[in-house]
Image 1 (cartoon, rainbow, N blue to C red):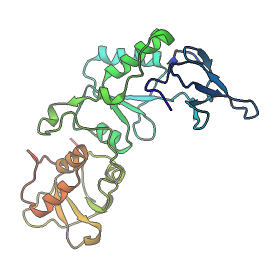
Image 2: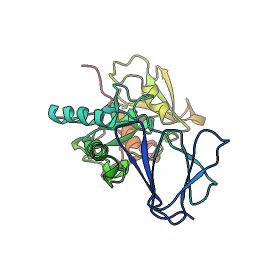
Image 3: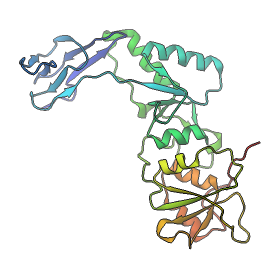
Length: 284
């Protein structure tokens, strides 16, 4: 049996962490050497532990390995330079590494608002946590106070940014950035114009990151179809049943985590379920 508040693990800006048992059933610790017996901590007892220590709660059965997370943050659209400077300062306190790459590098994107931007889309392709600066500040405060802070580690879900002005037409606020989207466009083929002059770099990286398939081809648009539209089809219908979709609609499908909206565009390509269709961004 595990208590509701079984133990407290406190971190400080040093190599070790501190664990205090708060339960009636005990917390068990075990080092990397399997030949040594495990040890039970009793209620109120604090122990200084190193990384790779194994922990079990209530009974020495299911073991968890104590590891430090290697957190790397990407600073997104932060308007004020003073705020950006504070984020950098507090990140050093937490031991974060600041990176300029999101995919395959960042674990968190720090943003004041969720806006229509490639940075946000790239974060969503890799299930990167998107948090407000407040999450960094709360974690920094906990680290500064050390093992006597009595604070819980701040949850990313409590620090999700609200929608910005560019998402005023989206009725969900805040957008859930913590949902898996890896198969959002599974079964869809996106035909990207070969001769495009669009500033959207590596569209295959974005669309395939959500499970879609991208073809770079020249496709003759149907009469009346805007040249800024992307031709889309179900995989089994490609290339016989292509239908035009604005980039804004695809972007909103990603943000809302609802690929079914592509079907509504196919069924009524003259209009969409979103306010304002937008267009694919071009180079200036």
